Length: 120
Image (cartoon, rainbow, N blue to C red; front, side, top):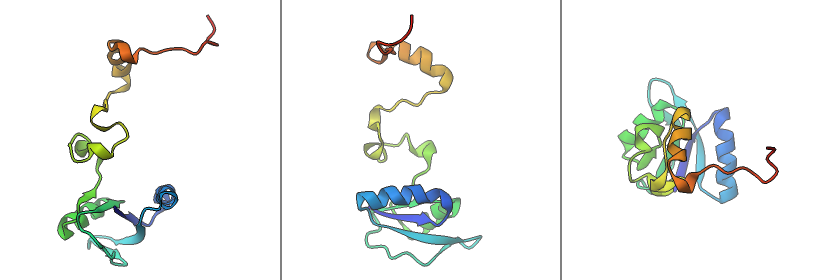
């Protein structure tokens, strides 16, 4: 999988993780309002590209036919093609903070436990 990253400070941690894992990635500036990348990425397989950055990258991926393209959390996090690549996969729960206590308490496997050192 090839990663195309928008060059800005927030993507540096992602780039460091990709480097440690030996995953191919490249840095690009996004040309505002035009939807082009500078420099133009060298893509070896259009079916194995992930882009991370601004909204412009989504349009770029769609125009160039890149897949899976841009990972947008909603609504795509619920689509099956992404789930094998997610930390919790198809069994992931998406809950609000309010739902956590009631939802998890109903499932015996997810009962909260406290460490032995917990004060009474």
